[in-house]
Image (cartoon, rainbow, N blue to C red; front, side):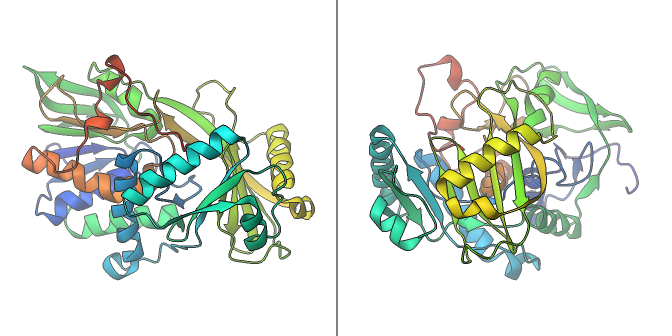
Amino acid sequence: MGDWRSTAAVVIIGGGIMGASTAYHLARRGHTDVVILEKDLLAQASTGLSAGGIRQQFSHPANIRLSQEAVRVFERFEEVFGVDMEFRQVGYLFLAQSEDVWQEFLTNVEIQRQENVPVEALSAEEIGYRWPYLNVDDLRGGTFCAEDGYADPYMAAMGFANAARRLGVHIEEQTRVTAIQIEGGKVRGLETTRGPISAPVVVNVAGPWGGEVASMAGVDLPVRPVRRQVFVSARFDPIPKPVPMILDIEPAFYFRGEGPGILMGMSDPDEPPSFNLNWDYSFMEKVIDKAVHRAPILEDCEINRGWGGLYAITPDDNPIIGALPVAEGLFCAVGFSGHGFQQAPTVGRILSELILDGETSFDLSPFAHDRFDRVAGKAETRVV
């Protein structure tokens, strides 16, 4: 921790990759009077516990565009930020079992191709040929994009954070926000466990805690935390590397390579919202069952470790991005439903434009905070 700043032009609540990206993009434009407040340590919560997936295969065009720009950033990350975030473009393979989901996949492929995503639609036979360790007997087909892949979320977040620091951004860890001050319809600052900060702009990028932070400003955002559990095996050579990110969409199960081992994970749709970050042995057995069904060879792998992470879920699985009209100077980007890490480079840029210019060229209407009270828009269907 450095010297405490009691004033700032912008205060960012949340020290994950979304907060670090936002601060970097502000500072890059010369707006360096910025403070990031993190209640724990940088990138230790949802970012650091993420499975690290990076993909362009979404069903909603706006999500595709957010991720497309981010992929280009990640491809040049080490060159620009001097940090190897270990971006492995080994591809994303989505698998469909039922006819309804397969038809949905084919519709999504058309949307993705309209956005210039280099996606392939594959039959079950083609999938079995290219990845012979997979059981394809119950599959209708799948889609694959070779530009997609995964990376180290913590290293990516620290790349943004260190670059922001070098440009003059101030970062305070282990500092919890306790209140947001609003007077006369404008943001005036906030209270923290280390003291007050006066500021005309506050940005809520608190991930699964985004709803709680919003309530401090009198805003009800429908963002709820949902646990998903991840497990990593010991060295496992029978599956040849590289292993793409493979998503069995209907059971919401995924696995990919992780160093010499295999990473696998899943969420429990019946688990109530909570901030629980533990992992359960009984749930691990369910994950292993899904893994062995899809790749029978995984029956011989040995799980070494596991952890729980949090998704910040909204009713339509799309994020809430933009200014909040309850008060001038209040902004947010929360509720990414598991996609915040991969979309952070783009969203940080968008937030910086909203703060500095009062507008952005990116159409944020699908992500409006009040869309849930209006006619329902198109939800994101590819959420695992």
